[in-house]
Amino acid sequence: MKVRVATFLLSLLTAMTLQAETKPASQHEFATFGGGCFWCMEAVFQRLPGIVHSVSGYSGGRTENPTYEDICGHGTGHAEVIRVEFDPAAITYDKVLEVFFEAHDPTTLNRQGADEGDQYRSVIFYENEAQHVAAGKARLAAQKHYEDPIVTEIVPLKKFWRAEDYHQDYFNQHPDQGYCTFVIKPKVKKLQGKGVISKG
Image (tube, rainbow, N blue to C red):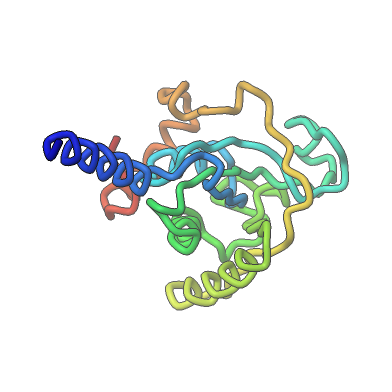
């Protein structure tokens, strides 16, 4: 009898431990932001522990169902963004924002490197008031690391449009493509070297 009770208690304890360690998908949270080419941002956040999934897309504009061709110089107002799903038990929204500000230059208006246009603007799309407040605090904290003023917009998320399939998981699928070799790979290696993201 004692053996059975002990076995039951051990099983119950194991189940409770596993449940505490892994939050169900329904308890995951989302963050949406843009900081230049979405290929770059996606590559960075795919290597950040706690990120469950990332999707490249468009947001912040005036048109519905935008395409990549639409946003390239056609005045749609949409930005290239990524929407990440993360486990708050493994990484906080504050940490996600910290990495966001480190993964791009938030002081350049409508530009990241050679990529120029309002589709490359620095922007955080908040999904609730808690994210709104956190984004403001993160921007203020990040300013301490830059001499020039940060121009990152903080606006409510109205709609996220998933980008075309060929934009998804781009760096992993095309590591030897020119842009990946000369722009994304150095950025990823730099952040890996600083211990910001994993080397996997």
